[in-house]
Length: 61
Image (cartoon, rainbow, N blue to C red; front, side):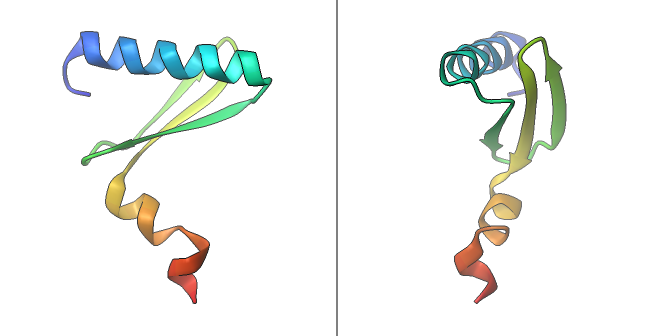
């Protein structure tokens, strides 16, 4: 996601999917980036894989 073209491609694709599915939020799992992106269709959270995996309900059991 450090490459601007990659970031634009991923955010645009997720934004289109969110619009089609009428979702207000989306998540992009990254290697180590953490960010919050506001789009015209909603909010996209970029979260590192380790945090995403720790936040899974199964990880709490």
